Picture 1 (cartoon, rainbow, N blue to C red):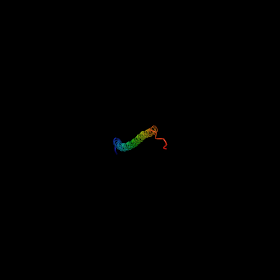
Picture 2 (cartoon, helix red, strand yellow; picture 1 turned 90 degrees about the horizontal axis):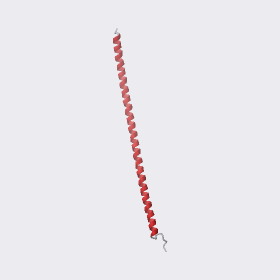
Picture 3 (cartoon, rainbow, N blue to C red; picture 1 turned 45 degrees about the vertical axis):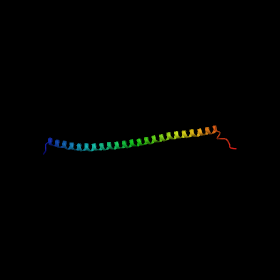
Picture 4 (cartoon, rainbow, N blue to C red; picture 1 turned 135 degrees about the horizontal axis):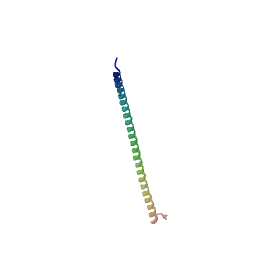
Length: 93
């Protein structure tokens, strides 16, 4: 019959092995969860960046449209003024 010391040593070793395995599994799960979170954060960051680029492009297009519209209005107004000054609106007889 084994002595108490030997039983304690065996029990301690087996408990240590079980704890080691549980620790390894837990560490793997934590690492996988961390990787998953990093991937999700990276995807979200890419989506936000894409949205910022699209918004910036729309702003630029809007500014260009405003400038072109103002230029066209100025040109049309200038033609009308020049036409009136030169008598272009008179009826022909």
